[in-house]
Amino acid sequence: MRKLASVQVVNTVEPIPGADAIEKIRVLGWWVVTRKGEFKPGDRVVYCEIDALLPERPAFEFLRKSCYRAAEVDESGAVVQPAGFRIKTAKLRGQFSQGICFDLSILSEGLPEGMPDGVSIDEGADVSARLGIVKFEPPVPTGMSGKVKGAFPGFVPKTDEIRVQVIPDVLERHRGKAFYLTEKEDGTSFTAFLHQDEFGVCGRNLWFDETDDTNALVRLARQLELDRKLRAIRDAIGRDVAVQGEVIGPGIQKNKYAQKAHRLRVFSVFDIQEHRLIDHARMIEVLAAVGLETVPQLGTLVLDHSVDQLVDLSMGTSVLNPNVQREGIVLRPLIDEQDPDIGRLSFKAINPKFLVKFDE
Image (cartoon, rainbow, N blue to C red; front, top):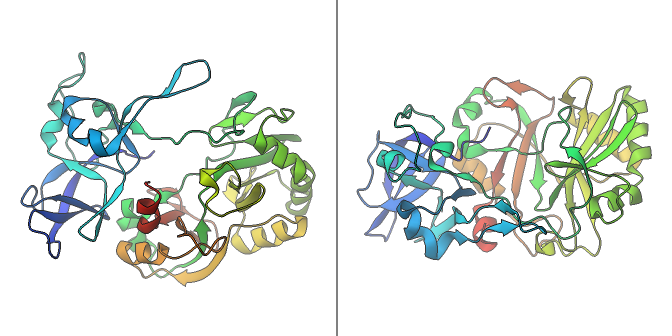
């Protein structure tokens, strides 16, 4: 579970060249720009990650000019995402800043009525609910909603990689292991599965009615003959499977890759019975056999990198469109593996140039 707001410790404080009023502090693996002298090494702070949506409270009003987002409503007028202040990547005096830090006093300042007084200030404590902070979710692209069969099925994992800045200890624990790299694409999440002979199509959070022709993901699944192809993959490995990837193209995230039609680029083949990802080489093999495209493959590396080095590695242009910055990279071991802290060993480094360029 992602901690959008948590109690963390300031690791280091460093100057920003040419800046007199601001400096940068290190929290976990993130760099955050703060007022000079506001925090010192060892201080405990409330750290809010990028994509945190802070509620409309007096303590956060100073963010209105730069971060305010109006409420999102559905076709019936129901609020699907409240109004608030979205924390984004910024660049100040040449320094990327990712997140925002507050003094611990924010945990007792102007709390909603009925909120209990006691709250943990232990390092790592999740205080998102305490502060009313939720995750900012971009609007669903046109054509990506429709008739719903149910919630996202529990027998397939959701597609959300953890950011490398949150897991410096994990990097150290797996130093020396071989990982493969893929391009992180800025599309819309897609899952298709074959489970106990039932074929299904899902977005990020919902299982769609596969007969609904108004849904672009359903139409794409039919166009690609995914029902037949998943059966072929199941026959090849002997177990039920799901394919997961990104759909890119017109109407999706401003079509940064200048695609003329919707395309599915697969990043995972999931073995449902074994509840694990098919290993990389086998995944490439079975996808090629049924004619499904993968996300761009960027080679392999032996992990011997700091957080900052992996963020530097994330920068570069997209394989799909060299005229735009890629969103980032995803790293996974060649053989699927579990980590005691994060579960599946898989993480992403997001390109800060991309985030600033596209106001993310």
